[in-house]
Image (cartoon, rainbow, N blue to C red; front, side, top):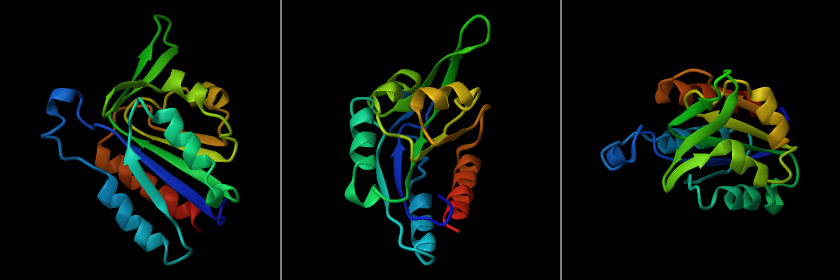
Length: 171
C-alpha cells in the first residue's frame, strides 16, 4: 500500500473518560487531521472523511466507506479516535475493547465482526489501552493491519504518531 492511493476515514468519539464532561472537553483530533490532509495532498491527492464515532452507525459508516467507488483501488485507512479501555477476563485475556462513542459505549471487539471486506484496510485504534493483543483482534476483523496503543497515551501524542504513520503511507 506504500505510495498507493488510499482513502482515509476518521471516526472520532468522546475523549473524556465520562459522558458528563463531553460538552466541556474540547479535545479533538479533527483540526490536526485536516491540516495533515492539506499537507499530504501536495504529494498526491488525498481525501479524508471525518465523521462522529457513533455506536449506532459504526458498522454502516465503515461499510459505506470501504465500498465507495474511489476506494476500490488502493487501500483504506480507518482511524478510530476516542477514549478507550480494554476489559480483561480473570486470566488476563482481552474480553472486549471499548471506545467512547458519542452515543454510548462501543464494544469494538463485538461490533467489528459486523464489518465485511477489511482485507485492504489498515485499522488505527487511536485510543488508550485497546492496542494490547492485537493479533487476535486482527484475525477477527480480517483487516490488512491493526495498529493501536497498549497503554494509556496522551491524545496529542497518539495523534502525532498517527500523523507520522499517515505521512509514511503517503510516500
